[in-house]
Length: 198
Image (cartoon, rainbow, N blue to C red; front, top):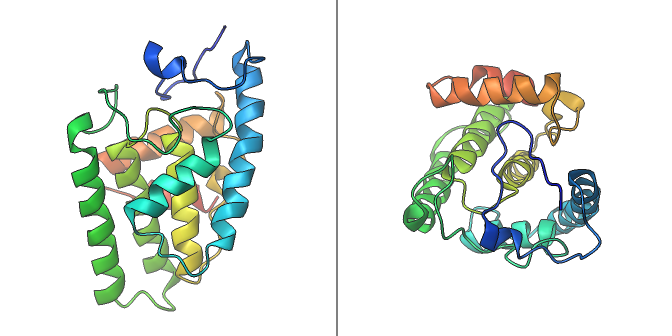
């Protein structure tokens, strides 16, 4: 199988790669197309979860599972190895719980209602921290973007456009996204907010 992951992507280790469910996939293009169909199912599932709190570990896991369950055997399961990005794998559950609790606290104790700039900043900080935690073996960027979209919708805002381009392949949009993530790593989410709404 010829899988070449774009810059900034986290390829699965050999054990994780063995969890690929469809047997017909032989190239990265095949995998991208297959995952895209599965991700659309995840988007539709998330849109129907209007009464469910997205700031729970169960929702985070279930969304990843819905996005990748036809692709990876381990969909919805936290990673059990370290990657080129992310916290130590043994800290994933604790760091995720802290992120969810902190985000819930911000929503409950910050006047975000009706303030689209505050809502966007909160959802984008959440996205950045979720990418930084990197809870799953693969699909973390796509999952974190859909989680941020879900959070924005719950806060009464429109979904983000994320540069209005596919971020799964190399190109200008992906380069701008990665640059904005690096700026957020340094403490400024401004570029990431601008990119998410571009």
